[in-house]
Amino acid sequence: MKGKALALAALLFCCAFLCGCEPKQQAEEPALVLGFSQLGSESSFRIGNTKDIEEKAKTYGVSLMMDNANQKQENQINAIRRFIAYRVDVIAFSPIVEEGWDNVLNEARQAGIPVILVDRTIKTEDESLYLSQIGADFYEEGVMAARYLMRKADALQRDTLHIVEITGTENSTPMKQRHDGFWDTVAGDPRMVLLESVNGDFLRSRGAESMRYLLEKYGDQIDVIFSHNDEMTMGALPEIEQAGYTPGRDMILISIDAGQEAIDILKAGKINCIVECTPMLGSLLMETALNVKEGREVERVIHPAERVFSDEDDLSALLPRGY
Ligand code: AHR
Image (cartoon, rainbow, N blue to C red):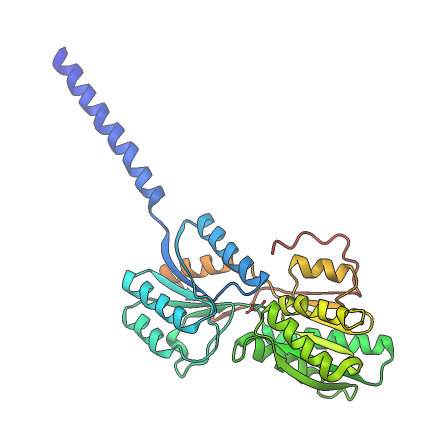
């Protein structure tokens, strides 16, 4: 009887051990290990994008190795090399500029690690160095900004609008494509006259500097400010006010991103139009990375849906933006 009881106890212990360990091991096993190189923290878009990717990695059971490159391509290349050395399952990164990635991406390929681009894209001789790009259609954002301005010119019955442009980081995809989308669209419209295009590097401080320079040079000749992101727009706004102009009335302001702070300023009438650039790319990234790991086909280019917010709309029911 004593022997039987001992045998039963041993059996129960084994069952408890097996049942207790196995499901726990499964729960702790990540669906995949993803190395992600974020380019920096220059804007509310970027901070929102980092946060969304971190949150969605948890939701999808992905183990995330996140590195912030502080606005330096060299730091992004070093981070990608660390991900290769660690042998992550998938590498993703938001390239700060378009050129200069072929060597490190060849190293990833030699190590058999697939690559996904997030937000921006790259210029390469070998398109097979990455599988997919998940990010906004920046050209279309420029087109939407231009279409708003053409409608505004109609509404104001203006013969001429003198435009200054504050662009984002030199040689970055959004800088190039927003510029092209905007100017291609207004090209046939004789009312649209460019005064000058200056580089503000997507930074609030550089937006302020650029605006000071433009106001000193052109003063009240300026009718329109087309700024490539909210951060630079918010740097420009106090400069316009200090120079004695009322933004949104004396000068038309067009921005891109549509973060909460800029939307509040749009509602207050000091920005006229903001084209959305959504940083909420985390779910698309996790789903694509999981598909890649499972060897499933993925789409080459994935654009999230985006819209325009302007003084033409009733924004009273707009939900919090989340960035
Ligand atoms: O690449 C997207 C751009 O980068 C956003 O519009 C800008 O705010 C960010 O810095």
